[in-house]
Amino acid sequence: MKKVEKIKIIAEIGPNHNGDINLAKRILKKLSKIKIDYVKFQLGNPFNIYSNNAIFANYQKSKKFNNPIKMSLQNQLSQKSHRYLKKLSKELNLKYACTAFDLQSLIFLDKELKIPFFKIASGEIHSIDMLEYISRSNKPIILSTGMANFKDIEKSLKILTKFKKQNITLLHCVSSYPTDIKNMNLKRIDHLKKRFKLNVGLSDHSLSNIPAILSVAKNVKIIEKHVTLSRKLIGPDHKASLEIKEFEEFVKNIKDAEILHNTNFKKNTSDELNVKKVARKSIVSNNLIKKGTKITEKDIAFKRPGYGISPLDKKKVLGKKAVKNILPNTLIFQKDMY
Image (cartoon, rainbow, N blue to C red):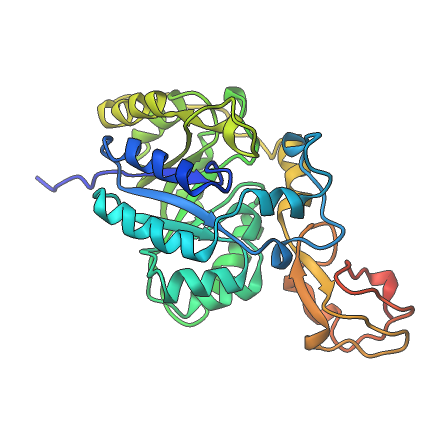
């Protein structure tokens, strides 16, 4: 009888350390007592991620922060801290992984921390600079598909497989934090498999164990779940995370799961459409572009939010002339060019 491959379970710590290395250490030590495959963090330079036009998703809004850059800075750990966390993870018999949100961070994680795989977050699915970098690698790729339709996914896969055949797993994901159980849309796992002929997993932002349990019978290869010490902590992801004891039960449920029930196939929710504007990147000015100046590659960068021109459409910008002075680090729109 053919041996059944076990589902890989990823404990997504993300920014739930709140920028505090001691809190990150406490989480790792508690997770070391649970049988999981990877602990995963997030890393990004807020100034490479957000433009001056960046906005909050509805679930992120709070009185504490007046712009996303300040919020992100508050919840980031340094590269030095991530080096330490990888070392500590190894000491605790945990496997360190991390998601990058800008090219500079991606290169650091790849070259210096030797991450075991590339995890592409839903908001980075069209960040062409990172996709092209990853396309030259031999590491496994995990691509989250929150907010994405099939054409979005096809565009990303085309870039990722530009140079060679890649080991890619798609993660079904609903980018709503936390996700209401009625919006989990688990049948999409079947559609992803049928359409793309790739392995599929689940990135689960609900507070229930049921979606992951049901996904087991759909032969998912990876299940990712956010974890925190307490949902009462202030931060962007705590409310959509399981606490340690809950996560321990969650892992046990996955390992014991046998039966799956179908759910209805739905289109993206209104919450996802809101997050889509926030999480994707657009073409922004890299410097002051004076009126009448022809826009070149060095004049543009790719930053959030995502309601401007997609990085995939940069050919629509390059070679055009500015109809007015375009300030640095701002979105470039069609009306700004001729």
